[in-house]
Image 1 (cartoon, rainbow, N blue to C red):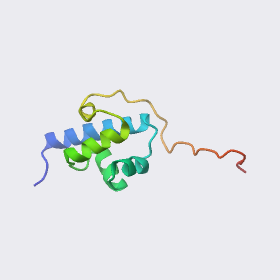
Image 2 (tube, rainbow, N blue to C red; image 1 turned 120 degrees about the vertical axis):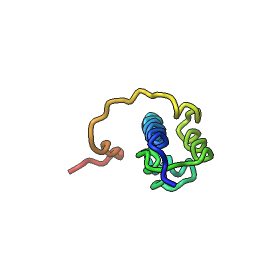
Image 3 (tube, rainbow, N blue to C red; image 1 turned 60 degrees about the horizontal axis):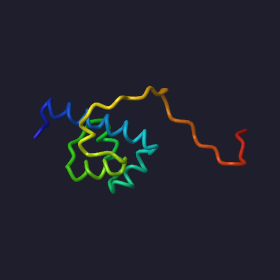
Image 4 (cartoon, rainbow, N blue to C red; image 1 turned 180 degrees about the vertical axis):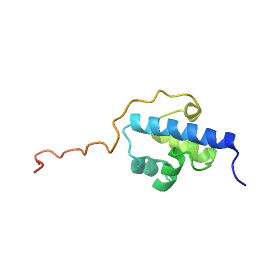
Length: 97
């Protein structure tokens, strides 16, 4: 059964909030997936609002980002970001050429 438009809006809302909480926690999608015990493609799909998820997964994701599960249903201020990938962390003693 295809999710209703209302359900898709909720999935997208929670996914966007999860992404904001993940970024605030300084986590990559890969690290969040490891902490929550799920596959990174599942995290990506949830953040895009493209999939349904269980409450168990929601609780695991909330724990992984240090948020209350109910907080993922509340409006979260989104921080402005530059488009593109974040800069890579440099290792001490190495210089770029």
